[in-house]
Image (cartoon, rainbow, N blue to C red):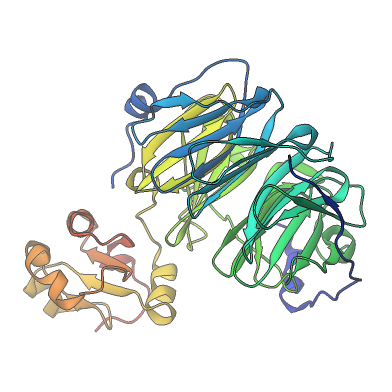
Length: 434
């Protein structure tokens, strides 16, 4: 990213203006063996694209071009569903047993039970691109600044935002709802009726490089936007905000231990979230794992087709994309388990992580990282749970060179700990040694 981005952390974005809804419409552990992954998980049908995915608690779902709506089980067995349309389906939302699908030419499919879908008739002819739920109300973002809303999925009202750009993505958390356009407009509402509006490129002109928005995703209190740099579209970015007033870039200093530019062109199309890591669906069949450590990001290629969406469910990840690609992999296969000393130091001091020395008693006595626990690698199975009973705790293992730390990490995974990392050897630690 441009070095001019730094001032963004101190800039507060004001509200331009507000506007209201109108017009009611009637209803009618180790790196994966990619050869094995591709053989067992990859299925493609040519001449179509899955644009969006969802998880209903039991099944994965994928929606795509030509009205393709598919239910997929955890073994990647797909069953196409009757969608009542041949319009391209662009967005999906699932929750509380309900599934909402939207697509071109005003297409809305709704299922109140996650099984039987109805084609909802509205007067809208806009292309509908993304769906979400906020305050017990469904929202759909569409072309030419259109947002549709419904409390029960059958009767829809229109909110006309003051732009002609297409709403490409809409997301919500408990506090607010946000929508974006590719032209970097972003809209925020705390009630789903009155919306504020800003254009990112216009507001930050002269402070940050101009960009193009690709997708908006929500994780807890934080909204993430991904896209490409306008003057260098081969180069992606990830940025985030909690309120829309202050934006930060997520640094990608290294990917696979090298300069990210070696992987360009790199297009990030969508994000998924697994504990403390971000998983990005990218072009050329690649998944990018983004960690808190700016140098620890990794990328693996799973297929030749561009990937457009990812979704997690039951310790599995579904990726979907071009040529009706749908693949399921275990979550452990896509996580990054290495960590740099600088990030380990920050996680230990500010995020509650625990550093664990797995060397022998003699090695421990000769010197160890200040504040670390000592559990020899052979005692991990017997003593780790006693000393760290909370399995959601971030664990950072180290030894002399990293081999025993990796053994301890894998043992911890088997015990149910998920946020586990290998620091390597103590000689790499630049901070205090006791």
